[in-house]
Length: 249
Image (cartoon, rainbow, N blue to C red):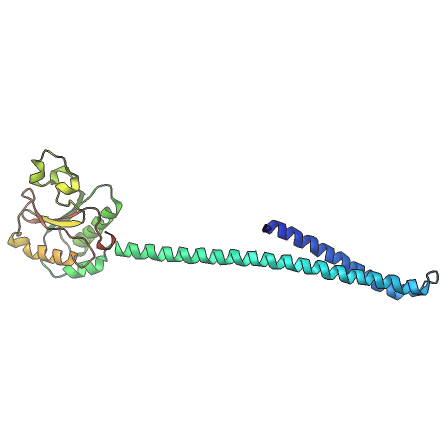
């Protein structure tokens, strides 16, 4: 049965104490070797024997208990080394996990500067960004798009959650109540562009093509475009659902 760290520490302390006591005994024996021969009441052979025995006991005891204390110290060192190795291993795994999280976060977002660069100098249109409610990742991507179009490209852009009124005409007449994402044209999630009519009218056609091309460069799952007569003809809707990023399907 392997001894615990506390037991090893206790034994090391005890063995060190015994080793120290025998060291004192050794010193006492050496002192006797010097002064005992001057004591006339003790026979000469005893004055030599007694110090020698005491010195021998002191040396033997000190060696034995110092060795045992050393063994306990080595065992404690091994435990300490194992703990250090385990801590370093946990740190390495934590750093690896952090790197994966950072990489995943980078892959699951868009570079706003690069996205804006793709659309710089291209035709513009009014933009509506619709996002799946109660989904933080979708909301964050929608916010990124809104910042690009409104702040960086100077488009008239609004952002809002998907609502019932955004359902396609075919689903408004359906008896079966499909999920909201399906009713707006995203049955399998991802992202789609919606306009009032396909192909889009000439005034927004250039912007529509530019946005479509830019979206395909950013690991996004772009579903088939959708037309909906309820959308004003001069507006392009970017509708975002779940499972947006292609590398995580």
